[in-house]
Length: 236
Length: 236
Image 1 (cartoon, each protein chain N blue to C red):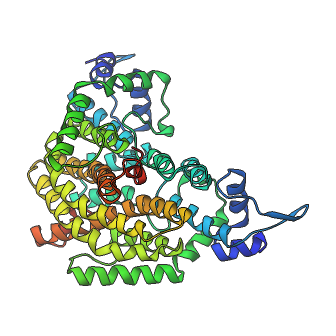
Image 2: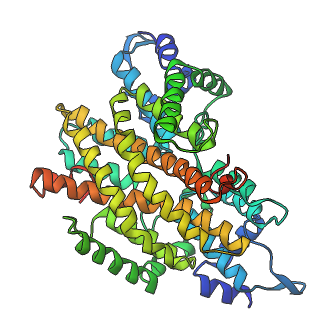
């Protein structure tokens, strides 16, 4: 199909499609003349995936480019691809948002903070959690470092008591993770499998986030019995 | 304390502190001479909160400014503040990331998509879920719209089957939301209460996300019994 047809079918404007090709997140079409290219169903599918990761998953275009590049490289073993995906999705403890407008000095201080007392305590809390739950996870895993970053931040903002909810959260995470894995295991083809994991990781997280906020509104309404107060956790 | 002391205690460089004051996320210090200001413990606490929301919560500085402005306005009823917080945190179905470099045309198309068949189906799925679970939530709630956005995206990328996991996720969200609410109800002062909700919403989401990914690694290791394959869900 031509680019206009691809635009109509995907709902993505032509200039945006061209922009994605330039940025390397969407493969170029096959040239049929010097200034005309053909696109296929694979382009349409990829375009929908890009929009979902951007709009619902909240990933940046550069993160999407890196994840999709790994997905498309058949030489990459599956677990390496997912390492890239997880690395792009998981906020690293030392990671800082690009738009925070900081100087290099900030990085030095943050690196030093990463070695501060809260971080050491947080890493111990994560190691204790993994042992307590009997989870087969290396304490140096990216998600473990990410969790340690969250716990350190909670301590730093004076909400260390929130860490007491860790096991309630872990109890909830276990059946969700098992269901996610069952979903992925139904996929056989490598591309399908990898895409399922990316979709499950990113959109699954957004799905749980929305459900948790809905459950807050419900729990609040039951606790206070007042529709005004029911807005306590989410803007009703 | 002077700005240098505030910097040492918070681990945030002086130029960054000045930047936050200019951007309106941190109140200015009290001037003690034409070019010297005093800061107090409130500034230090606020600075740590800003860093946590930026680094761990992944919020933009403009989102943080809006949330904190509402927190600081004593004329705002609590549920209004949380409406602002939820509105900034929840990705709206029609919301698009600022850096996606799109034209105005894109917005029109997206608005049209919002009325497409997937969106109508997704809204019905959310209404059915709320009825099935008996949750006291208005179907027009921001989190309900956000969930509908996630479901519509799943259908659009050809992963409509993932929606079957909705009740597994909802089962997990209920005890988490109850624990969150119990945590918040222990706070009495308004500022404390509102801050707890912001922290719980943003950092709690990051905490669950990290735990879910850890549980993926564990579930994968148990299912495949192969440490190589255990990297299937997260970069081990």
